[in-house]
Length: 72
Image (tube, helix red, strand yellow):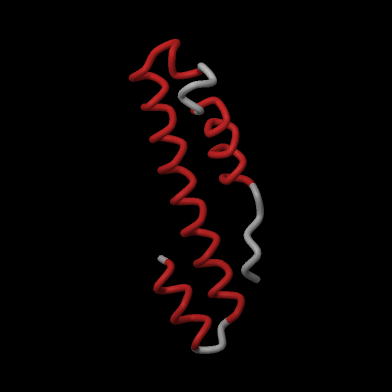
């Protein structure tokens, strides 16, 4: 998806490039959310302790799904 965004940007299609970049960002954020959720489930209650650092990642992963992209 990022390659498509780069091609569109190089071709002068800023709107299409921004759209493709946003789709790639959202797909990456979804993968991140799934990975963090799986890590927490694997570790059980320990997954939310400060030592593992996953509690911070839960918030960061979810924010990445909704935060706007800078590409426009």
